[in-house]
Structures are given as structure tokens and as C-alpha cells.
Image 1 (tube, one colour):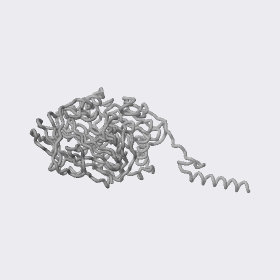
Image 2: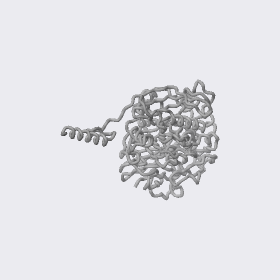
Image 3: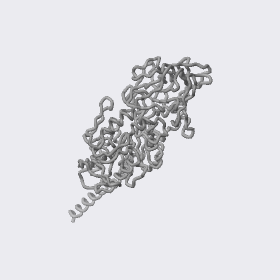
Length: 560
């Protein structure tokens, strides 16, 4: 009898312990390590589109029974161009497996953590047949069909998320605005939203980006079954005004408010000339009730694949694709690196962007002392520079730029968009191309470099404006950010003084007491970048007017 009672008690206690154990703990109270799945690969899977064409996809999934959420990307760079090559000097130490195509999620990481990863070749590229339709509604329809296909496969949980960098970020905006039923979350990294202002014409000045990108990334990856493509390079180069049809066809901004799924948006602070401005604008405009923005100051591909970044990527997708309480809902909506120098900074958080409590501080230019002050100067003065076009930034001499300085007498955090209001003229030209840079000096006058858009000797922030494009859209411009129409040309006469506003792209930086802000203005690119400029119109001497009635100033967002 005693033995039977003892046996019953032991069994009862065992059942109680087992029933009260979570998946995270074993009977000793120690955490149970998560399951790490092995990977099953299916190459060149055919996904049928609504018009009968089959796109080619690689499917990487856990080699196990069950249904798993899906992480998908679609783009024209070639899913089979493996492994993706990243330059250690320019791109940093991008840690990926041999299965990670360029700018797309690494299947090895995600499959191990219980996700299916699908990489799809866009129509007419890689191994997909048809006519290429880059970033247009036709490509979004294909993406929609691919998402819905993935949502009903027998290995799918029915929940699909999107993830990817640059093109693979851009392509998410449009398809997400169509709200496919099985799409549950998006993660656009480095995804600009205004092809004219963000990527091809900075302030109306033509960027070299379209030439490099179209020839190297698109034409080199056309499918053997491609039946044609729109020559975006030629169209963009021939159309310097924003009213051209090509920009309307590629416009992403008008549909952003229709995006409702949760979104984790990330962009490099330093990617001026391509992604920083438009990605932040995308975050602000989307209609998602659950959305996060992450701004980082490191090399973008190294960062995207880093353990630090993927931990938050996983937290986001675990919440919205696996229905786990991952902790993302407790994370601040804004996470940014307050930079101090190259690869030096601290992580800060905020509740919204632009950050509440910032003070828009005007620093007035003084051409007599080449300094800036928070108080307007009454005396009118001028300073000039030789605007002759120079091909290489490193060949610029001191006579081909002007530099205004401001000394901080207390620690100052600048977070947000900067604006330059300027009175300017040319002695012989009918137009002026302004190149503006914000830089930092230490207390002894040595320049402090930051990670740049293409090299390590970058500056804090950049801005550009062609003076004939100075017209502002009053409905879209704010006291903080000027919005230029770029829909007509207003030439100037020699020695005609005009007032212009230059949008300087968003940034984050800490100045310590005694450090110096440098405002650089010149007629050519200031730092090396993959997004340098062509067709520069400068000639003769450009003059800047300050003081008195010429209230030229730099406006910075200072956190209180």
C-alpha cells in the first residue's frame, strides 16, 4: 500500500513539473536552446504569375516537418550570383553564407531559426523570362503573386514577410501598398522613395548613379529569355525635370500611406546621395500602426548582416510572423546612433521622427570673419570662390571653396535635417551648382572624419542645389525642410543676386565643447562617392552675400 501511494505521488509530481515547464526551460530550470534547423534547398522553383509567365525562385527551408513563416525578396540582381561579393575596405566585414545573394537576407541564418527564405528573380532577369519592368506597378504585381503563392504552400504557415537592402528595399514599398492578404510584415533597409530627388538629380544636379547602376546591375543580369526592357538610363539622362513621365511611373511616395502591415525600416545615416533622405520619408509616410526606424552610422552591408542588426530583425519577424512575444513592442519607435567620429558613437532612442524637443537654431554667416553666429550681423560682406569645374574632389584647392566655422562652447547634439539659406551670384554664368558639406574639426583644427557614402573619409552631411531649380513647393516645404518643385528652370543673369534654400540631408552628430562645425560651399563634389555628379554648369566666380539685408544662415536641429 505504501509503495503504491509513493508511486502515485511521484507520478503526480512529475506530471505537475512537466505541465508547468515552458519551451524555454527544462526540468532543472535551465534554458532549453532553440531548435536549429538544417536547410533544404530547392533551386529554380517556378512561380506562376497572373499572365501565365513563371518566375524563377530559390527556396531555402527547414529540413523538417511542419509549416514555417516565409521571408521573401524579389529583384533583378540574380538570385544565383553566389556568393555575393563585398569589398572589405568599402563594405566592411559582411559575414554571410555562400547562399546570400547581393543585398538579400542570408538563408542560412533564417532557416536555422525556423523560417523559409525565398529569393525570386524579377521578370526578364536572372532565370526569369519576360520583359523587365523595374520598380513599376507590373513588377509589384509579380511580387504580389509570388507572395500569395508562398502563402499557400504546404510548408508555409501562411505568413509572409519581406526583407532586403536597396533595390530589395524599394521593391517592398510598392507591393506592400497593394496589401497582399498573406503579407504580414516588411523590412525595407536602404529603400529610397523619390527616384528624382533621392537618386538621380540631387537638387537638380545630375548624379552618375543611374549610369553605374543600370549598366552594371541591370544589363549584366538580364535573363537569356528576356524579351526587352525600358531603357531607364537614357530616359532619366534626357529628362532633367521632375515632371517627366519616367518619374511619375517610378514614383513610390504617392502610395506609401496605403501600407498597413508592420514595418521595420532601417537606413545608414551616411548614405547621402542615395538612401538616407527617402528611406526616412518612407517611414514617415507609411500608414502602418506598428513601425520602427533605425538609423545607423556604419558600413551598410556589414551592419545589415551583423549579429547586432539581425537580432532586431529576428525580434521583429518573430513577433509578426511567428506570433511570439519577442519584445519588439517594447522597443522605442526610433533607434539612432549619435555619431562622434568614424565608427564612434552612442545608441539613442526616441518616440518619433523628427525628434520632439529639437530647437531649429539659425547660425548667420559672416563673410568678413568667415564665421557663423546665432546673432545676425549688420554689416554687409561678400566672399567668392572659383567655381571652375574640377573632375576629382581631392584636386579642389582653397580658392575653389569657402568655409564658414562655428565654435561650440557646450556639448551639442544635432539630430535631423539641416537647411542652408543663401544669397548668391555668379560673375559670368547663367546658373550655379552649389555643393554643400557639413564637417567637424576638433579643438586644434583637425578634421574629424565620418563613415561616408563610399569611403571612410566622409563628412557629416551633404546638400546640393542647381540655382535655376530654386523654386519651392510652398505646400510641401516646411520651416525645416525646403521642397523644390524641379518642374521649371529659372536662369540668372551675371551678378544677379538670388536667395536660395539648400536641403541638407538628415544626420546625427555630437559636437563636444570646443569642437568646430565647418560649413563648406563649393562648385564641385566635396567627397568621393559612388553618387558623384556630371554636367556641372559652374564657371567663373561664385559670390556669397552675408549680413545686413542678406541674411544667409545655416539652420541646425539642436536637441535640448
